[in-house]
Length: 131
Image (tube, helix red, strand yellow):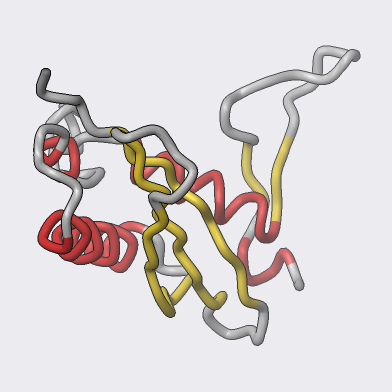
């Protein structure tokens, strides 16, 4: 895959190498880091971009059922379509087997726009248990 499509940017989380230089990411690594930034950012927390992020934090106390997974699907796809123009989401699936009761593994399959390169990003969503 060419960095001309995806670009090159600072790695997330920010870090430096042994010489003290910033570490950069490109290609699929950069896309996955961008997805992490989008999906981990609750909306209304950035003063100059309050609409940035995704509103999935409001589902932390919902039961893990088909309704929750449908809502997660809609909110995740919408946020990616708005904030990450370099990819097209192909599918989002969910896994809960062999995970703690409060965990949902969101598996996002995507294709890089202008390329035949496909990728997958796994986003862990943790619910708060109502005990």
